[in-house]
Length: 329
Image (spheres, rainbow, N blue to C red):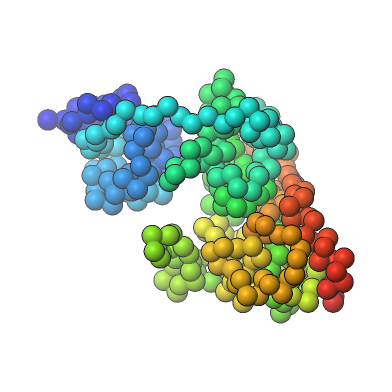
């Protein structure tokens, strides 16, 4: 027996159900669509449902990144849900800090200078992230969704949509490469050229239960351009331009060049980092400094910039003061 389902699932669901995608849900990834309906279900379980074909779109299997269209018919399998735990709450001090990190906000878009150490969203042992805290900060805002993500240890410009139409528009810009992203990074070692492009496909893998990324001929295409800004005896201060948007892309491409990022616990080189001396760096040196988007409805082309945070600016100044710089480009 099947039934047409249009509401939220409950712990009592024991039958296959079907739901039609509404107009305002068009363009959403199917994994995010399912996570919104099966609240409290681990992301890994959602992926398993898709991988096994238990979730189907218009009768066919769908990958997690498949984007739904208005009128699509989604098959929802029986899922036992535990009663959801009360969501973790950011403290008043944390919310005040986050409010002070807002670079821009209008009725369509919010741009945040994300602090390092704060994940974009909760899960996998993280009680809350940027998006949960922003929803707490803006309780009357009906729609707040991440347009893209930054690694937990990366700081800088992060886009959050306040309308589904804005989210769809910016996702389209991401797919076509219209959104331009620039990062500032300190690389261990010396870049060979002032402009160096890396075109190396990337694939995910697991090691000891940890999810990592590596250069793999069978992986997804990925391109990064590094621009040398300053050269030091043991490091290079560079700007990185993303021409694609893969997980850990800058970090893995930098390591592929033989110049891993300073402070990188996953792909770094601890022995090479010792040569930097006592510059006081205690985090990943990667900062999303600039992001540029095409015009949204009623808006001109917009460029957002986030200054280098103190935790990165001070170590960089110490490198300069130590007179280890040999070339200034």
